[in-house]
Every structure is written in C-alpha cells, then in structure tokens.
Image (cartoon, rainbow, N blue to C red; front, side, top):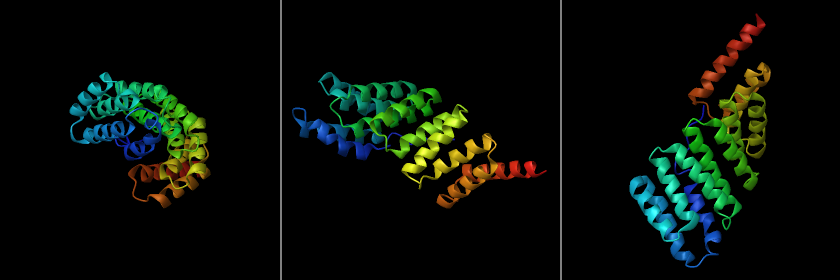
Length: 222
C-alpha cells in the first residue's frame, strides 16, 4: 500500500533544522558539518557512513551520530534494527527541536513499514505527532499503518486528519477511499478516489482501487 520514502526522507530539511539544536553544543559549526557530511555519504557508501557514524558516536557525537548510524542501516536494508535505533535517537535527542524529533520518528515509522511491522510503525508515527501535530505526513503514516492492520476506522480517521492538514496529498484520499470501501461506504469511497485521481491520475494503486470500488457499486446495485 505504501512506498517506502527512503533514507533521504527529510534529510536535507533535517540537516537544516538541526542547526539550532546543535548550536547549543560546543563546536556546533564543526558538528553540523560533520552531521551533514555523514548524511550525504549514506547515498554513496552506506557501509562507510555506518562506520563513520560509529566512530563519531565513540567520540561523543550524540544523537546526530546515532541518527547517521540508523539511516545507514536503513540503506543497508536492516530495517527493523534501524527503526528501533531511530526511535531511540528521537527519544534521546532532548536538545533537538521538536521538528527534528518528529522527522526522525517519521523515518522510524517508514523503516518499520519497510520491515513489515505495521503496529510498530503506527506507534512511531503516533509518537512523532507528539512533536509534530501539524505534520500531514505523520498523520498519513498513522493512516497507512492502520490500514495495513485492517483497522479501517482508525485509517479513515487518520487519513481525514492528514487531509485537513494538507488536502493535496493524493495518498490520503486513496487510504480513506480504501477504508470507506472496507466499511461499506461506497459513495464516500467513490468520491475520495476521484479526489485522489485528481491529484495523481497515473498512480496504479489508485486506478486499481477505483476499479474495485466500481465493482462493489455494481454488485450493490444488483
């Protein structure tokens, strides 16, 4: 249902918004550069980034080093281990901004989804919302994790919340359409799927779901 947003989810943004938190620490400018360099290395050589992160952590790198280690593990497809480390990093990053911690928890949720552990993903996304209540992506994460657990009531509720925060997210409309289909609200599902298509008319999952909704409506009409 959900495509994994990948290790670079929010990475550039995170490197920028992490600066105020790191400025509270000694040598903030150097540490910020080291943090950005470690994150950038992940795409080129995840194993090297992992080793660099470990060395940096041993030198007192704190949560930025832990974050680089965790994202390196995502790139190495160690999703479950990475997800747990990302959650631990976010919880321990008490000097970081709320926005930074929300992004890290969003990454944890995505990693849990990649590990096919939807319940853990839901927990991470929910915790992320404690730090970023107005983040539509986190609300959508809750919705998608709920849908994977076939908790259709929560999926509909969380998708609606994501739409309230950002009506342009096609996936939110698609998730709510699926939830409404599963709950027997075919008219609502049909309306939502058209909204999803209006925002992304080439998405295969959305097109397939529209077909399923149309089939269900034909069966209902007899």
